[in-house]
Structure formats: C-alpha cells, structure tokens
Length: 236
Image (cartoon, rainbow, N blue to C red; front, side, top):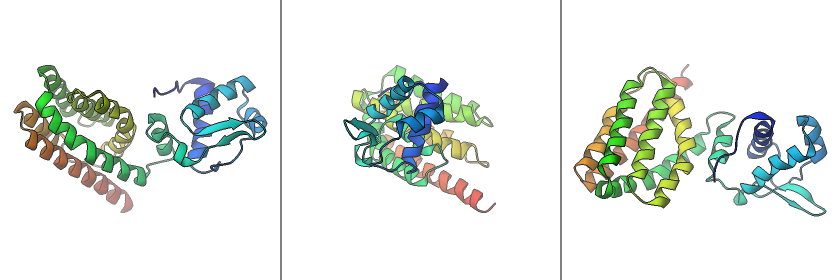
C-alpha cells in the first residue's frame, strides 16, 4: 500500500495517533475519544476522520455503531506496511524489529540473489553497478550511503523479474533504512562495497550458488555491523 502524504496537519495527526497506538500508549481495544483528539490537535472533525481513515486502511483502527472508533488487536494490523514499520522506529531504534528484519532478509534476499543470477539483464547489472558506484562515492555522507544501499537492494529485487519479490521492497525498505542510519551514522565502519560487489560479480557470471552465498555473507556482515555500533554506543 502506498505511503500517505506526511506533510501538513493531516500527516502530523496520522503520525501522532499512530505512534501512540504502536507504542501502547493507546492500548489495543481502547475506544478513541474523538472529541478530545479533535481539541488536542486543533483540527476539524472531518480532518480527524480523514486521518483515522488512513489508520483504518492499515488495519489499526475500526469503527462500530454504539462502540465508536477503537484500536483493533495487533494481529489485525498490517505490519508489512511501510508506514507501520516506520512508525515503530519513530521513538528510536527498535532492536526487536531489526532482528525480525534480518530474519526476513535472510529468507528472501539470498534466494532473490540466486534467482537474479539466472534472470538479470544487462540493464539490471548496470543498475547494480550504478548503486555500487554511488556507495563508493558516499564515504563520509551517511544520507548518501543509506540511499545507495537502498538502491542496491531495490535493484537486486528488480533483477529477479518476479513482481511479488519486487513488492517486498515496501516491506524491507523502511526497516533497512533505519538499520543503515544506525550503522552509517555511527563510528567508522567497514567499507560496504566489497561485500556488495561480490553479489554483483556472481550475477554477472550467472553463478547461482555464488550469488546466494555472497548475499548470505553480506547479511551476516550487516548483523555484525549493527552489533558493533551498538557495542560502541553501549561503552560510551
């Protein structure tokens, strides 16, 4: 599902309510006090209802006659939605989410690399090479490093030429960006280019096993990088 527009009063209202729900400040099953929220955010009833429609579309809230608008059980939330993932990181890095992200990536990306080794076109490899070049140029620029890494993993999923795998970008992108910000925004870290280049080289050679292995090694390195940064911060 496409992310909503974050700008303006509408976006701020959606985010504020979502964060309270996802952090447990407003518990599952709780009925929202519409009048109080309208007064607090200083918005019209129509604007508040539009904000709640966004959360309803993501399975977070619902409305019933006599009961009003209430928070649905967490099991009903669309946890694969990019906004929902982002909101869970809003109050700071969520290690549990990072661990779950790695588990998802460990299942999907090595298999995607293996598939891409049989299907990648010249344009796909060129896109991956371009992301590698951006990665190399991003030294000392955390924002550029994050963008380059996202471009690489997006291009890898595209190279599978499987529409469903390509859509996994929505699931992984926000969490991956948060992981990248943690790593690239921390102390000095290892050069990410060699581990990513190993995947591209294997794709170029149409070596399925090497592509899968290189991606597994890349993901293992990603876990070590996060642990290293967290260890550095913990010792400060």
